[in-house]
Amino acid sequence: MKPHYWDAACTQLSRGDPVMRGIIRACGPAHLVSRGDPFQTLARSIVGQQISVKAAQSVWERVSAAARTVTPARVARMRATTLRGCGLSARKAEYLKDLARRFDAGDVDPAQWSSLDDEAVIADLVKVRGIGRWTAEMFLIFNLQRPDVYPLDDVGLLRAVLLNYVDSQDPAAMQAGLAQNKAAREHAVRVGERFRPWRSVATWYLWRSLDPVPTEY
Image 1 (tube, rainbow, N blue to C red):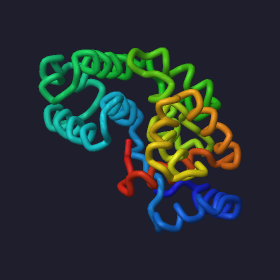
Image 2 (image 1 turned 120 degrees about the vertical axis):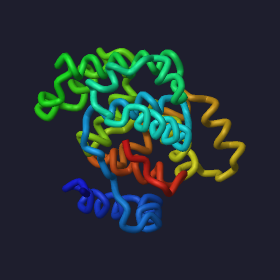
Image 3 (image 1 turned 90 degrees about the vertical axis):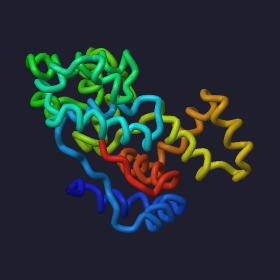
């Protein structure tokens, strides 16, 4: 289901920024989609850390096939060797099992997050092993569908900002900008100010400028 704010956000972003207007038009009717299940959203985010979207999807499909039913109780009982056989590193297998145990025991309670602001949700999530700020921000965007999240630790976002919002479209200049991570982040922060209060929407479209196939966590 389309987030309730999506059309209004697209209208405002398009009016205020001709570059974003072009990206939005190129994407057509596509929009952010959430799978809706908090555990699976976080589990998929852990699987996707530091690997490509394509590789993450392949690993997730193998995990799903091995689990048969991807629930906290089922994943908590899976052997680490089984998870590693699906393509997970030993550390990611540990993180996934720890997340499953916490959900199964009730130590992680998604019901309370709807009443918390973004930073409070992030603070709660990063207490879990294997969940850092990037993973928590992916959860805010893809599960809680918060409208103004801007994940500056995401290399794809930084690359897309440099690609679309630099004076020179020279690929070498873009790579140099990425290599200077501090400079790339500072540039992304400045560009992001024009997207408030719809930075989640702008981020999603910037990702689409790199890869037209939407990621669904």
